[in-house]
Length: 349
Ligand code: NAD
Ligand code: TYD
Image 1 (cartoon, rainbow, N blue to C red):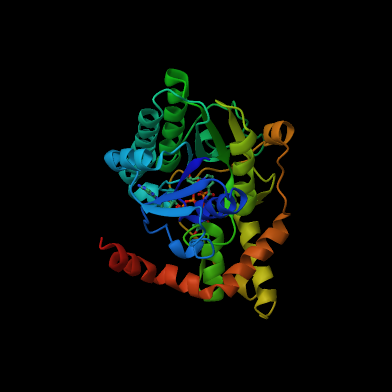
Image 2: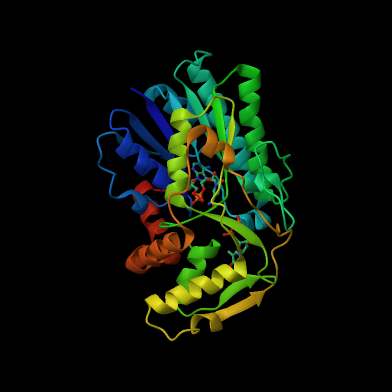
């Protein structure tokens, strides 16, 4: 039996990974470790919270002693590390929070795993979930490959790049079995509404202005979150130790084209007049150091492990809009912050 520690499991991507693992691996124990920051929300997991193989642990990866205790008392054999500060805009206003969680927190987890495993690395794995943003910014052409040089340009991507380097250092120096995946932008249910797609959906519902940074010509490669979770399961089960796998959707959109598409789809679903929501678009000051374009080449993952996205973008976007429209309570709680008050009462901090 494996004791699998998933960090950041109350967040957007983590909650989909936790659900997939709890359902796919009933004979393993799944521990969800999360500090429940503003981005962590246990309401993302109500459907599986009473499963026999699931345990939630509230802890901060900045706390090495606490991690040591968790590894020892639960005999952790596998780690899937998603906990992070994840929003580029927040990293511009508070870079040190990103150093503390993404760099120091990852180093703490590696150290706790190393001490627990004592160089007996048989049937152990440290899986680190990272981003394509570590590769920097592309021009109009080209793709990020697994061997593209790192060139992070925001405090967020610099902190993720640093964490990737620490994970590889534990592989090369101590022989720890690790695997890393670098994924493009995710979208889907439970996405925190300060990122582009859920923010626009929320603002369209409320007829608020739609803030497009700069000229809206920056390009992102979008992948449905459940396809990312499937890729993580595939790499966890079949990936080669020490390797890196890029995950992406081959699905590039300029921000403005994407916002137009969202507006049009939502006008249709909300029974509004065609073109209504586009009128809400407002061009605002550009993000500092705004990366122009990200695009992943995921051929290695397809050729070696057989993974491919299962959803076309329009279908994924439609499912996403439907999820937000039928989970307005979730959206209201998250945007009003009332779930944070609940945690304060529940956990007394
Ligand atoms: P998120 O912000 O939605 O969730 C992060 C989770 O980590 C939250 O539940 C939060 O409570 C928890 N957390 C934060 N600091 C913590 C700490 N110090 N200790 C313990 N838990 C802590 O993020 P996400 O979008 O789900 O991203 C998850 C991972 O995937 C991150 O590592 C991110 O870098 C990576 N990633 C994200 C994307 C994307 O498009 N969102 C793309 C590629 C890679
Ligand atoms: P975001 O969802 O923050 O992801 P990332 O910066 O990690 O790619 O932003 C996606 C793109 O959308 C990015 O180019 C910035 C842009 N953007 C806006 O134009 N307006 C917004 O309100 C937000 C949050 C993002």
